[in-house]
Amino acid sequence: MCVGASGAAVDAGRLPLRERKKLRTRQALVDTALELFTAREFDGVTLDELVDSVEVSKRTFFRYFASKEDVAIAAEAQLWQAYLDEFARAEPDGPFLTALRTALISALEGMDADWERRFIATRRLIGRTPALRDHSTLTSFKTQELLVSELETTLGVDSRDDVRLRLLGELALGAWRCGAKNWVRAERHSTRRGTGARASLIQRVEEAFDAIPASLTLCA
Image (cartoon, rainbow, N blue to C red):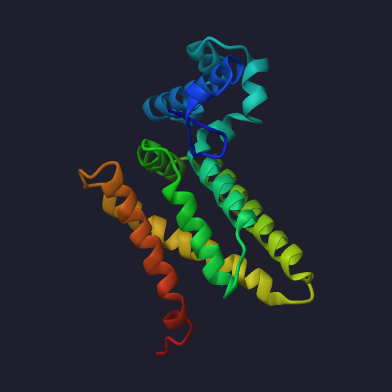
């Protein structure tokens, strides 16, 4: 199995040779970048050093990623793309917050088996690198805007005329941030891997969504 641009596992054996090579190159860039950045910090590794380590050209690198920051947060970006894809395919028949929640959980369930390890390492790297914190925040904000845009299309309403659409985007991404932050903190000392870690992350995110109604009525 390889990891596609969406972050989901891809059965490489079913793809044409050219596509299999592309997937392997992309994954090599992601894995090598994370390894180098973890060992020497983000600012301690040049793009030249990264592409030399993977034995590809800069031109090849830029076919897959727009910047060094993009490859550094690839684990996050993979989840965001999968989330957008899941929500775009959704056919909501109830509250839209529930649809946003379901799409996010489905995206998490579809990540490849090694995604948790990459995500935790990525979050730790982001935590100690200001430039990556900014890039990560911007990327999540863009994802939120795309979710709102999807809501606008589905409902035929401009979010500038109905603030509820923007609030839905804020609530969904806010629940993710809270749940993921608590999970990463707990996983620092955990030995769980694979399905155990995945189930734990999903549980944390579900708990955050469940807490939204009570949070709105919390009083002093």
